[in-house]
Image (cartoon, rainbow, N blue to C red; front, side):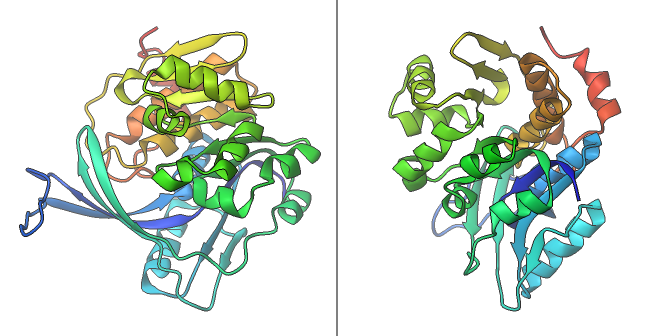
Length: 305
């Protein structure tokens, strides 16, 4: 099977609480007006790419526990190709509780790591792809040489680290970021990794460590910035009224990668990502609000220049 893109990273069963009046403090209890169960993690990128019309393979793991069973059902409901997902005969509870507010969110995550990582080299040989996306530091640890493996077969690579204080300071994660074609952190992740408060200093420092790559920095409501050795491109955010920001960064990744595998310019890739990331916040659950290609084309004209 040949794919436009392969997405490698953990799956999560997202338990999302919304319409919260405040943030809970120890010893107290608050009540959410709404609750949703959605598929999270790397599945959001895969769902976004599929909704846009790309042929996508999802490299991940599920167990035999109830949360894995719910995740499998959610994947099937979205029509996501599961042939590259391993199902193990033991529990692999991978779930996230999200307390979501219109402009931000907080997570508690439980991740059970499989005993053996995927054989990425074999997968890329058997399932050629234009692009490989490494979704989260968890996948990066299991595929520290992913860029080398992908480049040997002519596949480009992107990496979105996600937030983890220890991982963002780990030299192994820094090395993965240095070798990929597109490093896709948020502003806070990039500044924390580089130990810099000034964004431009953090961008320049990170780029100087990259072999031959581009930094795609997501900057929340301020849009996105693409930084290369030759130029910096800024794309403003799409003005929407957010409901749930869970998975917005992953939805952005899907839009950017869709533009990439369809040979769009760097700026247009960022524009696709900006639209997808913004629209994902207008529904609860990152995979739920990912737009179709026709919807993206409609909204591109509304994106501030």
